[in-house]
Every structure is written in C-alpha cells, then in structure tokens.
Amino acid sequence: MSLHASALLSALRVIEKARGLLGPDALLGAGTVLTADDARRAAEAGAAYTVTPGVTEAVAASRALGLPVLAGALTPTEVASAVSEGATAVKLFPAGPGGVELLRALRGPFPEVPFVPVGGIGARAARDHLAAGAVAVGVGSPLVGRAADGDPTGLPDRIEAFRSLSLEAP
Image: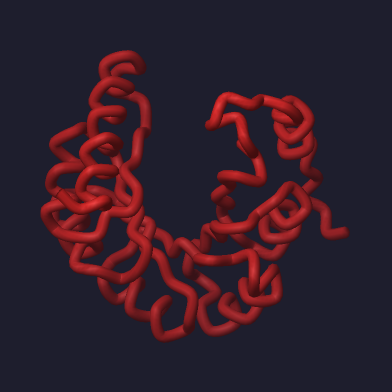
C-alpha cells in the first residue's frame, strides 16, 4: 500500500468517526484527493467536499459526485484549468513563497475566482490575504505548531493571534 493510500485510509476513518460524533450537519472535507477513486471513497466516508493538490481527475470526479471541490493551483494556467474543470474554489498553493502579491496578481485576470491561499500562512499573512480578496485562508502548522505532536506550547497565543485578526490593510 502506498503512503498516500495509507494516509487516505486513515483520514477516511477519521471522517467517518467525526461524522458519527458531529452529526450530518458538520462540514467535513477530505484533503489530498488525487484520483477519481479517492473522491468516491471520500464521498462514501461522508466528506462534504474535497481538496486536491492540483487539477487532477479528482476535480471532475468530485463534481460528478456532487461534491464541491477546492482545487490546488499556483499559476494562471492552473487557475484557468481548475475553473474550467468546475472547481468550486481555487486553493492557491503554496501561497507563502509568493505572498499576497501572488494573490493580487492572479485576481487581476481572475476577479471572480474564489481563492483560498494555503501553505505558510501565519496570522499576519492571513490578514493580508483576506484584505486582498481571499475568501478564506488555510492554516496548518503556523496555527497548530507542535500541538499535533503533543506539545501545546504557544498554541493559545497562536489561536488568539488568528482570532484577533483585523481585516483592515496594514
């Protein structure tokens, strides 16, 4: 079994358990969906949407299953592809290296595309991306830090930094 397949199976089990605990109204998504089979399995596990790392067969498969999809893209060509494949929104990834200037540049030719910058987004970058027109931001390690490994040091401070975001430009 590949590393991706193993990780996906673990994630699908979490979705199934969370669905049971949280009920049918919880919006649980499945990430790193690469293939049509991944999309099908995510839907069967109860995922309400999928997230892909790029414009793969999983985008069309998710849409065919009635699932909204956040398709990964970085370049104008990839954004156009994601839109033409029916992506509900575009996961701008990795957003950190290009900063908010990348989002602003892409919003020029794609003003109607809902962008969700992901990857390297700390509290300040989250504020800047939202002020520049992102519909949401994806945050992982800048928020969670080592808490996922059992070390919650600094987690309350990071949570507060994100909760207190001002959407006014700096």
